[in-house]
Image (cartoon, rainbow, N blue to C red; front, top):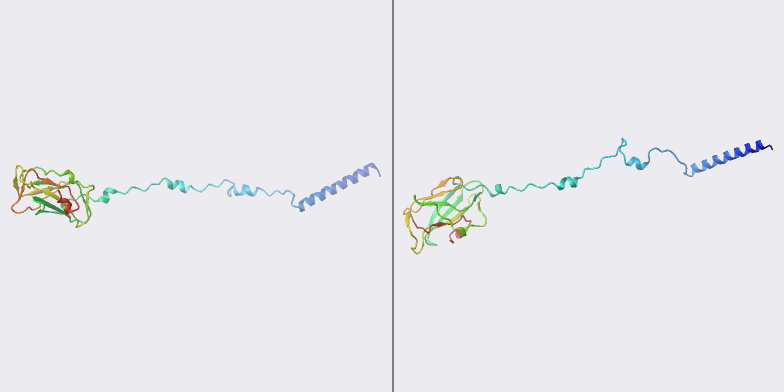
Amino acid sequence: MSARTARTRLFAAASVTLAALALTACENGEGVRDEGPSAASKSSTGPSGSTPKSAPDTAHSTAGTTPAAPDTTAAAGPPCTAATTRIMATEVSRPLNHLLLTLTNTGSRTCTLTGYPVTRFGEDRSVTPAARETRPRAAVRLSPRESGYAGVLLSSGDGSGDTGSTAKALTITFKDGSTVHPALPPRGVHVDDRLTVTYWQSSMDTALTY
């Protein structure tokens, strides 16, 4: 056998061996195939190959939302006025020399009584001073047909008061400027420099305590 023939046979044998090895690798799943983009890359991109947008952060978008505070002014009701109330002035036997003012809400809405009744007895007297110690902790709210009260100390019980006179007229002025004139006893009431009015109260007993 010549040297050329030997080399030809050796090359042919080597080719057969390489082909067999390649076939074996494919059968064992060890071959490499071009499947295109990997599964991982497919899951991280959208249909057009772009990265999908993340969902909106709803927790962050609602965390900064604060409910509006209730309107406490509206909840308290508008001030009571002469147009929505009725006032009566009643002379009481106890305590002595006292007058009871009873204000009733005749309107269809809750109204609020603040401060004390601005009263004038007779024609010449100035506004009756208020007893500061009778100021309640909160304004008096009156639902329809409910009443609020104020007491009036007309004069000293022991006769120690000065500049006494008889008053036959009473004027009460509301914060909006409206006025009412509750009727007094026909003979009038005796007043002196001890004349004092309480703040509006929700209780009759409290109004007559001073």
